[in-house]
Image 1: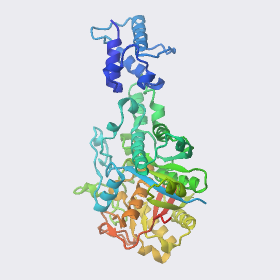
Image 2: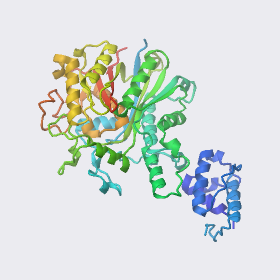
Image 3: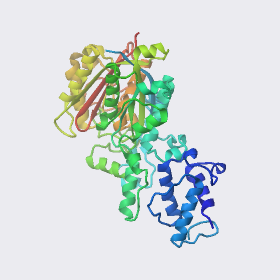
Image 4: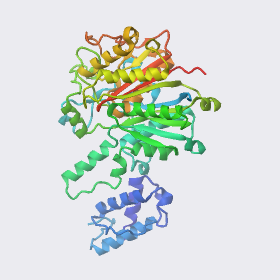
Length: 88
Length: 411
């Protein structure tokens, strides 16, 4: 179960982006999501999935990069995502 | 020395979303004071404030809002209106010749209070990553630059209630000296938070609510005055060098001709008539005017017992026999005390009077005070036969006094 659908939904709800903008390959910078907004979003994701980011800087350039980072953390921290991609 | 003119004004205040709405509401005696509608209002001694009721957030996309405290949103909206009226776009080279001069008392108070609340209530909580850039005092200044691509020098002034009057005065000074061609000058404030309001209550300078007519609770220069009502909002002026404005065919709204800035050096809260008088005298001297030349004063007029007597005495000291002939209006009775934004808001009101020839009233002044015996225009807005020169007073805690003088522009 990938976190991608939830992340896409959150980008739409929290940042006001349209659903057709938030493909896995969409570049965050081109969406207007700068580095500070990305950090804001990672904080939101920590709350959403109840996970803890490592704090080590990782290169996040696209929507897909965010999902890969979250999925890696979810796996590492043994968090189960339910069918809706929510952290349980 | 260069001449400095105003080519755009903007204001978002408790009296409406535009500068014209402010001027009209003041002349009609409409009050922006009301009971706050928030979950924590019951924790206050008085629920009264003068909030901006316009849907401020709706003007910004969610992603943009992420970095904007309410004070920055208000500041951007006031600036947008002023730039629109001036028909100025700074995305090109003109942006390099424009400075930003912005005043605020507390910066992003809402953001800071939110971070404190989260941190104190939940030890594991982390404030949002944008907290710092939203509450820092120069946040609005920076955001104005970003939004409108203004790339000259920028300055942030914080001298409590005179902050934005100082910002306008310093912008005027820079253009007058030839250091800049354009400036956006003004200020914003958004501090209607529980912690800030309770702190003001402790200082005991806020007006006691009138049980029957709460909207009339602030009564500057009246015998039964009891203090001011906290407000929020922002106001902006576009200033530019006169020949440049003429060359581009701009509509010139007024000319700024004098600015005085002094420090009481006596007490952190108690006003000093001497310091206030020196600021008025300095502004008059720079304007090349005598006491008989000012036809209207927008007073600081907060409605505190001590403050209104001090300002009355200062005006008498400066204007002598002319003091009783000058219509003096305290518009805070209606728009509230917008702290760091109030000087700019009242300058917009004074320029509105200059444009229309009508001075706004000092509302809610039914009981005269023998110690405040000037002409405060208590009866309602008044059309003057001649209104060419106005003064706006702003005096801040800390003892800073800033006075601006403007006149109708004659090429």
